[in-house]
Image (cartoon, rainbow, N blue to C red; front, top):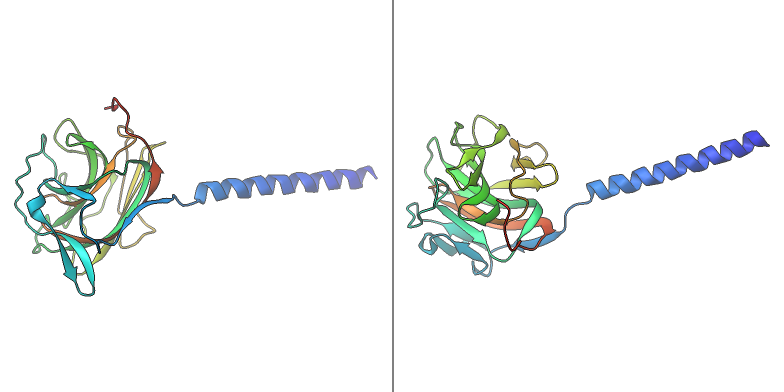
Length: 234
């Protein structure tokens, strides 16, 4: 009798542990909610370009895209950082997963690039990833702009981003609890760059290039929406 009771209790305990583990795994793997998505069919009114003259809304085949079509910018950032960017208005997130289709329209050269901006608090405080054709300390890296010229914070990167004249899919993942940053190019399972930094735990997102040209389509932002602090922590 005692043996049967012990066996029954052991089975119940194992079931309880298994249920708890399954619930925990479910919570950990649950995708972030979509907080914003844009197929750019209706224009670029939700975006604030640093230089509006550089940006346009155009037709591409049977769809519409936003195009950062002028290389030269009238925007002068307070510190060395991308000049050809547009920031999404009104969406502030902590944890983040942002995916977007990108078409590099610049002629091929070593620093042919596109940039994704995140953790954007103001022109002097944000993160960005520079996906450049050939890597060096100033290209194809993850950077922080923290009231100073951009500084590389990449822990891992590649020899370069293989831009072609086709469309490519980009993704950036940000987890504020441990500072994780991951960047993906076409392959959404294996990051091409990683970093860890805990300076900015909230911010807006943006698109653009450092000083080139590119088109953008099918943006999806998943994340945890937060309120902008009255006194931002720098």
